[in-house]
Length: 417
Length: 119
Image 1 (cartoon, rainbow over the protein chains, first blue to last red):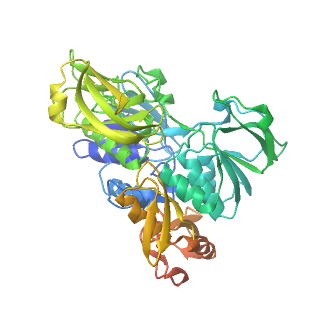
Image 2 (tube, each protein chain N blue to C red):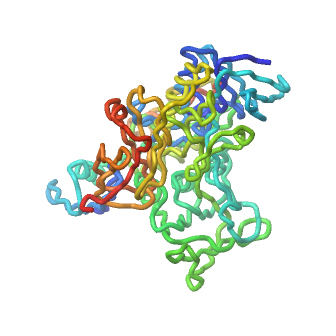
Image 3 (cartoon, helix red, strand yellow):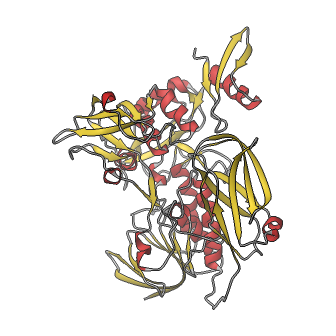
């Protein structure tokens, strides 16, 4: 039995930053399933990380290296190649690795930092045969950037999420022919920056309102059928055509990795599919904190790190006691708001709070309006809002203290409405 | 020369059309001053950070991620990557170490993006 103050599950950017922050005041144990730290960052060799935290554009491995060095120089106890098997309602953790066998851990608080995983073919019911040559974008990225193998020569990419766009460029640079990126939505799923620098720079076509209707091939992918979709995302049969290819890459979304939370009573958000947190990044289970992509899928690793530092600080300070009734403010998404994180504001005696929100549809010239119950208390103008671009709102201490209802409603409305 | 630029400064993603006459630029399209600056740079000297991997020996990994220390003209990106695919580097390597000096005579060095072994 290992006894510790804080156990961090997951050694990606969220786990690293939260462990470091918690270790300022407490004993910390960091558990990582893989053989090295950094999570997804070591395979994200492109630049574009750390603009906010380091004030420069770093590559993924560089961003991770900074935190890995800090961890190595800290007193944090690190176990790699270690898989957590369960967490029970008394916050006992069971983990395993090949040297220690079964490890039982008693921890005062826990930080969940398991990140997210990629959606697969079966989650979008993609029809066709089951040949070799179909990969998620992240798997292809690992094969090319870590293992040094090319997954194919003639590539079709389904979905225009950021990882898919980044991989379109990577495939081109490594000598493959990227035939096209097909996106079922009428808008691209990734950031404008990636559309320009990953597709336009390499003359890779992007087909909006298109999907794959069939995968063809017995042993190896031989091609796919693509078709336009109508406004209800139903394929228009007359537009269906066959495109030969030997590799299909899926970039069809990410979902928080919450499998381990199923034995304990932790509330999950229906929209984000991630853990519901308050402004201290504490879940609905006292003493269990969450940060990074297990809460919702962030656009930027910098924001993952910020969320992790909040979780780390509060998990490090956590003392188990009967808290009684605590005043809670629910943050409620309203017009054209898909979700808001954190979902709950507890203890108004906090400093500033950063709210993250995503919109449902693209709109121009809008106001983001915060309402204390029904009374508007804050307004921020945006020239454009788009689903792929997360919005941030900083709430001042003064504003938080002024909230008198137990509901904070958020609406996005066009300026002239 | 491509005179149509999609601005990447903000999520608006304005389509900017530029005309040049004797180093004098005229812009059309919905555009702010930041977009003007960006589009001039994209016309005159479009640069990109080059990122790729190189082979390493004696390590837990087959590959080491590397990057150009500064931006390189976008027409040279592929040539750089082809050049870097020919080399194999010896470990140990620290993040930031120079892996290849003055690539293609650009004056830009290629540096390591990570330590060769972290743990």
